[in-house]
Image (cartoon, rainbow, N blue to C red):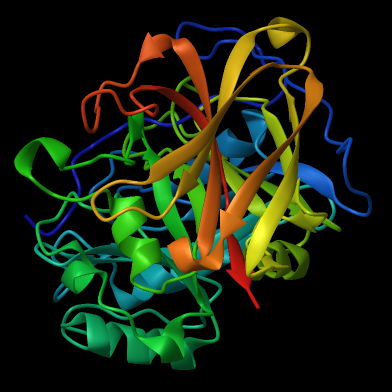
Length: 381
């Protein structure tokens, strides 16, 4: 009960050696058509091994993810209670040694993390902390937030809505807003936009952002098997970094300069009135011009896609604009926004030819298949 169920990992961003479960994939270039000074790296920030409830040898995980074409990878085994299906002190130390051995500054960033796992309140990943905490030390959201605030690390809400407590219903704690940098929108193959809708819950995205949190949006494989990094269709995160090092990956995470997807090799960069995703847009009311660089290389040139503008709603995001586009180009469009309607805006990229297996309200524009989410922008005077 204290740990997650097994899952599988995500595909590579570059050509791979083909095999029975390891298929080749191509992707877009790593250079934005909109902005300068950063490079796209493909990341999987949520993985498990036999040190908690996974099946795989932790000695093999980082090498597998590098072989799969990932540029940034994290091991985040569960911390639960008294090491039941979770990390022990020696295993935490061992994770650090494995990450240090695999880390290759400039080429491959290996990160030690952990997943705080409460069976009712939910699960939270923590990265770049010097220590870890479990349910004995941090038995509530408030205690966990206090620990995170003093840890020096950053954290994110995992598979939001899967556990009934939904992080104490996303109750906002101002003192930990900055280090809470992530909200998983894709976990394994699932899109969490409307998770729990069928049982009467609100959209986790709307609930989290409406409460006052300011996370970027991530995709993760939540790998529990032995095929870290390879199978297609599982979540991953695209980070825009100045260098592929731990320091600069952390800087990109703190800046929310990343996007969620479950498609290998995808490049998404986006600006709102010239402000990059994850940033603050100085606006009370007026037109906002979005520019979206969306590419997946030769495989997707000309592929029909949609861009949906998500805004605050009580139970689910409202969608004031839907823009038809194709992969392999920059799309520009303008939408009037008003701070009185709420302070956040997210762009969702979708494939209109496929249905969302977890739909929301009847007729909602996001009841198609999600390809990617930008991190939000926040309006401010």
